[in-house]
Each structure stands twice: as structure tokens, then as C-alpha cells.
Length: 407
Ligand SMILES: [Zn+2]
Image (cartoon, rainbow, N blue to C red):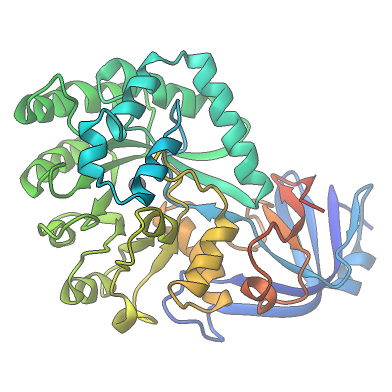
């Protein structure tokens, strides 16, 4: 018999995708029954019929999946998971109908989080992020993108990115440098210069991020400023992501015609013709339903005509404004709020999320890929979404090791 570190057998339904999914079909989607998986050195060694895997491999660690659903681990492609302080008082104000502009005027909003994040020590930020990421992992997220953007100045953006990178041994993290807002101590043009000539070169020198992301929107960064930041980012070897058309349409989603952008996220105010254009490219559309809901808005992206055509991915958009960390909840919202099917929501949270972050060896179940797997307390993929609103994971296999879920 061949030695494995871990064997999973008696998988009732094994679901994975062979390539990024626009429309679910037999060519890109595998739904297999009575299967098993052998794992060694944190990687998937072989997938096969349950009996075949049990006969071929031996291991000290054997899991009987008891006929349950097994999928690959979830990938959260858009978070602002690191910040200090909290803003629950603003939820109360929002519910009373007070506008974000008024909240900002009263000293709340993002600048409040910037102040508390600047005041926080490296250690306290690290402890907070560790807690958030443990929570995220126990809800099935095995890879997570995390943006900076609550430091704004060089010292504090570097501090944030160092904290994020410091936890890479423990968690699979994709770090992103985010041009979030213009800090109060700068005027706009000064800050663009500073971001381009100070922050980008230093983040590159210290190798602290894979991506640069810009919040392109009204009263944040305009298209011309975003272009400047993107041009410099490319020079320094960063890949690009974009927050676009979230608050108001000022043309930001048009930037996909000028730059190679891996992921363009939000798009709540994106015109249908621009969405149509994006759907013809390999740029992934990042859907963040919890973020729309947390704004107490019903302004969903107008994606109906491009369903089955575009590459969509799902993210939690965990932030100081909306600290919702569970990708299972993002899946629930993709189903009930955006009306995708459970299997589409799964594809958008696994293989498509991985593609939006241009990750190799993650996001699907394939020999040689990372052994990040979820054993659900569900019998089949259609039960995902039917049962909703709680942690439905029994066991998580993370980097080849077994972690118990909520049960
Ligand atoms: Zn965001």
C-alpha cells in the first residue's frame, strides 16, 4: 500500500471545477459520487473512487466523510480585514437615516478607523487580525485577500502590510496595497505624488504586496488619479485590482479598456453596457453583497444580462464599515439576494476567486493542488443555500491538516 498523510473516503458528493466558470456545464464542473481523496505533504495526491483510494493508500489519519458533500476551501477575494477600533455607533445612526456624509462630519466613518489604526501597535494589530482570520478559517475560508488602506501615510501603510505579511506562515493571504482615501493632512495632488513616489516604491522594495487596488469613485480617487497610480504600479511589477462604480458612476469601470485589471469589484452603479464590456474580458467581477446590504441600500449591480457570460467571484468585503467575515454568508447572499444557484455561488467562491487573485494550485481539487478542503454537514451541493444562515462545515482540511468545524 502507498503511504498518505490523510485519506478521506465515503464522500457522498464531491464537487469541483476544472477551469474558471462563466456558465456551469459538464465540461467545467465535476459532480462525483462515492469518492475518496489521498493527501500527502499538504497536497492532493490522488482523487478516485472511494473503494480504490481505501485499497491503494494507508494512513494514520483516515476520515469517513459519512456520505457528505466535499468541496475545495473557500477563497475570500476582497477584504479590509485589518483595522483597529469599531464603528457600531454608525450602524445605529444609519438606521436612524443619518447619511454617511453627516457621519463623516461628526468625526466618524473611515477617518475614525484611520486614527485608531494609526494609534494601534504592531502587536495589537497582529492579535486582532489573527482573531479575524481564525474566525474566517473556521467558517471555511482557506485563502484570503487583505488590503491595507487604513494607514494612508507611508509609516502606517507599511505597518499594516507588515502585520498582514507577518501572518502568512499561519494563513494563506494575498496582500494588497490599497489607495483608499486622501488623508486629511494632504491635498489631493500632493497625496497622489506621495502615493506614487513614496508608498509604491517602498512597498515594492520590501516586497509587501502582490496587488495595488484603487478606490475609484466620487470624492475618492478620480479616473486620472487612478491612471497615475496604476501606471506607477505596473512599473513596479504589481498586478491591479479596482474598486469601481460603488457610490456613483464617474466612468471608473471604463479603465478596463486601458489596463489589465485582474478584478473589478462592487459596480453597484455600473451601466449595463459597461458590464457587458467587462463580461467579454478575463477581468473578474467581484460581487460583495454584504457590502451593499450594510449600506442599507438595495442598489444591486445590474448583472442579470451578463449572468452565464461574465467571470464572477464572491468576497465578504469585511471592513470597519461592515465586519462580516463568513464566506458562507456571502454564498447565502449570492443565492438569496443576487439569485445565483448554489453551484454557481460555489464556483464564484472557489475557482473564480482563485483566478481573480491569479493563484496557482488553489481553488479546485486536482492532483498536486493545495489540500484545502471542506467536509460539509450537507449531503449535496443543492443543500448549500437551502440550509442557510449558520456554519455548515463539519471538518476543514487546511494545508493537509484537519480542523474541526462548528460541529
Ligand atoms: Zn472594498
